[in-house]
Image (cartoon, rainbow, N blue to C red; front, side, top):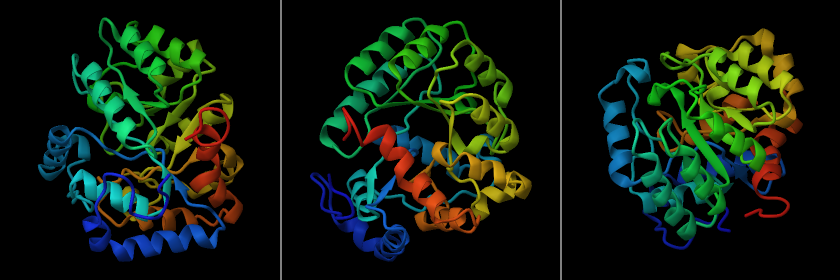
Length: 315
């Protein structure tokens, strides 16, 4: 594993040089906490032509971005992005790729297999869409070693309770493979976002290891309640609490005691590279919540390490 070196196989140092100050600030953060690095549950690596289309959507102020300016801070080639995230000291990260229509998921999963093989510190990530054959290619991905799945209810504009997905959720619950789901209504609502649709899924599959992306922004309280009710529901911090995220989804201060109570089920997420601020800002935004160093250690490393690094099959 190439934690914090910037010299991983197949990477270059161009991006590291460009973002050296960022890397120094990030390493200073986790070293102060006595951590060996970070585990980031929510980063985006995709086929280049797909990622460039995503960037184009942000550049065009598409409606799903909330219509706000969204400059991509780490808009560099894949080789450089890998070098940067390793220089940050991220011990494990994800690809978080997702389809916006039928017929894409199997192809994306094929790319993800190859990416995981050449990127040992990346958690093999897969995805799905409500379409015939979904359970078959999800089963194939699990058998190929997928460690985490991504579902994007907002972009995909589908009901997570679609009957075509019911066997998929059941398979993932049985396999114990976490699935990160963008199901909150931020930064802009979708037809099937909000707590209701995914709550119905959990009602049928209560053992599902569901990770709610972006803390469920802006329906924070509803998703906190789901995490309190279901032992395998987790929340990732992606963009929550940041100055940018607070513009369209301010986190209620009254909920902080409940958030502290979920110390073992909150995971660091960043949205790297698609963030309009330096990576360290997400970390400092968590720190300024005032929930203490033990909470920060759990969120920024230990909870993710228990899921994906420690024990059998850990990277």
